[in-house]
Length: 338
Image 1 (cartoon, rainbow, N blue to C red):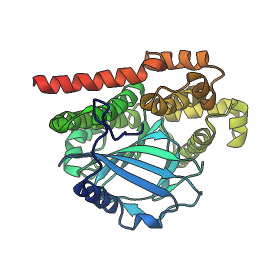
Image 2 (image 1 turned 90 degrees about the horizontal axis):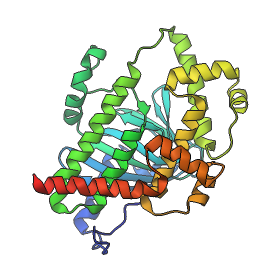
Image 3 (image 1 turned 120 degrees about the horizontal axis):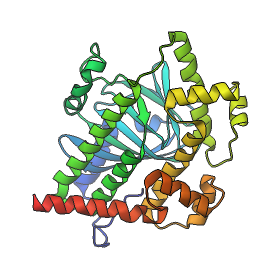
Image 4 (image 1 turned 45 degrees about the horizontal axis):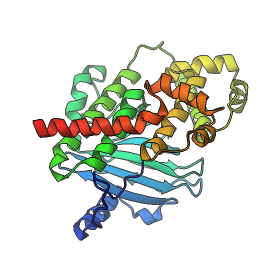
């Protein structure tokens, strides 16, 4: 979703003030301990909202090559919600695919690197929170990880779902529509989304699973990563199960079972949801030609896309933008009444 430089009446806003430009420049410096010019990709950083407890940041970068970036550390906790494109986040020896189906967590001070295997442009919304803000959100789940250092995530990703995807774009619509006096509403909406994401992460990673040996768990994770990377890079293309299995050197039946165990979704459902969540960016930003959008995402036709979208989100794609704007306006009205 491109955050436009207009107010709720559609009038053009004033150009960013010097203080706003300085805030964005300072934000770029705090996102890493090295200069962003050293990155192999071109990164654009735009702060959409800022308060003492929460910052909402729009990150967009061009995936020009497949090189891995230098190592970075964030002074704040980051929750990354991918809107378009795909990249790989490296945390030490582990790595996760960050695509529109996946939400990524970065701890304050944690080193990380990025790779862009798809060589496509990416757009991402980052929620930046101080560790003291995120800790109370994790406290109800401390029994799951009693030995966890305070404030550190015991996982690096979790699946995106319908509720969080709609909440994400409602928050972005709210940022566009809100005035200065609506800042508490934006903050409350963003923190509610962050709390829901943290809860979902614990529910997913500490669900009941059949115990396996550490070596087997690593092998399963690597195979799942390979499938996610393939689908995230080529999701507009037709992908048969046999072709995916051959690419990752696995038997189709075994791959089906393993992928569902690791992600809670069958491969075809994961691919379908990836296409559908990727459609939210153009749908929220404008009224695109649904025929062209459906074909670009890999659907056979507009009707195929519309049926799949209706099943996933409970509304036709033509109503998504209206739905998020209406929800944002309702949040503003509630704030005025309070």
